[in-house]
Length: 526
Image (cartoon, rainbow, N blue to C red; front, side, top):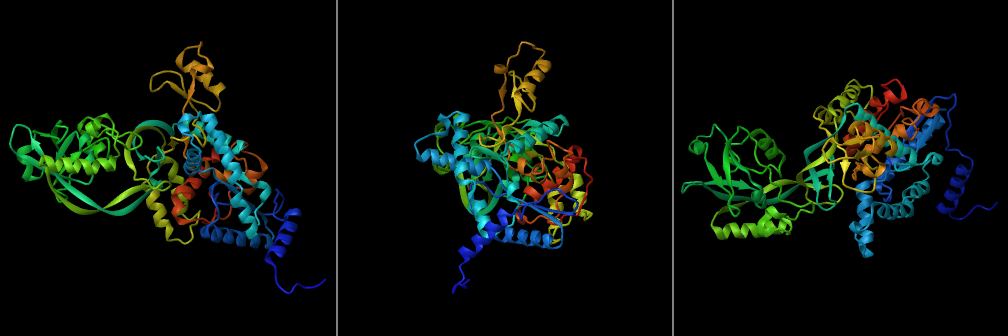
């Protein structure tokens, strides 16, 4: 045959990749060889390849091909993540462009649009990987919303709830007013921005004296319920036990004492707004202060915002500063550099918000995963990330796992009454009805009396099970594949999701021993 004058990548690569696929060269089945398994960090189903994906998957391909050459039974599992926030945002934007408001749809109608979007865009990134020549076991391709994957997520949630690790609580959360959902701490990006420090005068009740406080968020004064001074600050000794008057709303609030106040920052005294700052909430709980939430879910002011009601928080900031100036209580404005929390997905400025949410207790679950890395049973490469990992895990907080979204795994909690404890958690509606009858003592309860929790689970709650659930290790804990391929040998991923994903997968691995009866630890590399 004649040799072409020019190399045609399209002809040559398509020919040989098709040959490899047709002959199943990338497919792996359980056999007597030593396994070498890698799971792909599942990219968002709506995404396309970027340079990070290119590098990451090239490294994985090198590792998996090397393993094949060394005689291992190599298995590289591909797949995609449903990406709750990102996908829902895209679907909402698409609907809006068509003149459809999400709120005018039922959940079922919206999910039809979401699935349509997913089917249209979901295969793009996988097809791009094939174009790169990635030697994934494509017969094993998984999606985090596949029926078996979803069933695994629900089973784990119910199991953790029964063990007392999952609970519902009224806590301060990170609120994304654009997506109208909570975010985990790890989904909040802190960006340094130039802002202002506003110095405001609060009148002292029954006197001509005033007290100056400094704040970066003057609009929140409408939610103030106390002013706090340090008991060791001699400047304010004469104010102990007195009360102050909040400008504009004229609310009379107590002056409280707490050593939490930094004597050196600002004016040495602090306005306390328990509904809009986590540290203020701590002070509020400690001193039994009233909680006044001034914001709607979209970060406009509610009825507590007085004549600013319905206006956006940043519009109000400008208007309230002008009014404070007009009232003669704005002492001065100084430029101030501050770190602002923003949503990783939407870029919106995060609001601290008190909300009823579902949480996963992490301290106990995280300990085996911390020990395994410190003892180098699981190795991080390069080792410099061990310190970062240790810091995260030693300071781990309970994980807010609920999201106010429709696209995702709906939380399997069912409400049957008006009380806070009038709910049950179950893997199916049928099981929930039986449990609700037993818990309530009402044998006459019907399926229509139960309402499933509207929230979806955090996307990471499915992806932390990824290396187990792709081998069906949750639903069938003793199947041949989970016992053969898991734990996987290597993982290649970005350092910024070391806690987001990697740490949580390790945690899930140790917790899942109860499902799989596997012996851990092992020695994968990250």
